[in-house]
Image 1: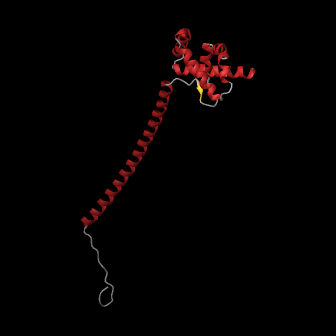
Image 2: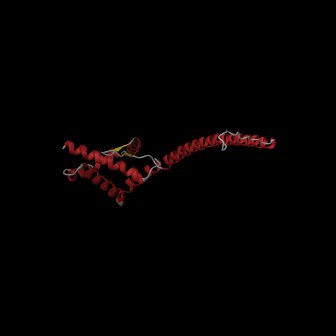
Image 3: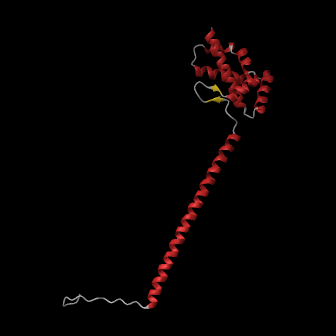
Length: 175
């Protein structure tokens, strides 16, 4: 508006080269937006490929961990019981027959003890029996089972702990 209150139109004149510049800018922005969208799609595809690779790696790591550790011979429940693998070892060693031969020596000491104390007592007995130089045949048998079943000594001895404990409890019930 001018001082007299009349409206003055602002004439905007753009030369031809200005229009070319605006058109070029719009085309450039369009190309840039297309490139960004293309990059986003490529990035999404790349991330999907990474996710698949990570899942494959996780499966491979789980498989390696399973192979590197022998299966457990006992279940971590209360009371401790043998797994199928533990029963296989027990059967191979005839651990039940061994436990029947030795359980009667522990019954008297187990009478006033809690179940976990009886288990500890059986574990100590098996460890002493295994370490006793006079029991070389027993020790050899246990070490051979360790080798034959692809496990460690501790797992095989746990089988004897559980089987001996169970036999002690059986004798305590019947007396």
